Length: 135
Image (tube, rainbow, N blue to C red):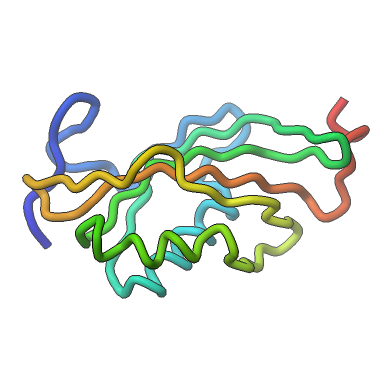
């Protein structure tokens, strides 16, 4: 493992979990499932630096939109093939359905650290939740 990322908005050592959400005291299970999937497929440690969650609703379902900044101990070019699999990943989370997973923006190498940083968006719904339940 190389040096830690640094720069605007980052401490010398990123906190393993820094959750910004009024409704959860820990990392949402949907985000943790994505982290575990990436770590298993890439074969390198993947950490959650920040995560924010807010309510999300479509015409049919209601749930949560999670935006999480992740750090991986690998270069962006090595991680890209794994990230390309992410939108098609079928992840099992008890009591939830992961409706969509996407990468926001680009995957950035962090030269001072030797890894890369990226943001994922995860839309999750509870199995028994419909759009009318969110109102």
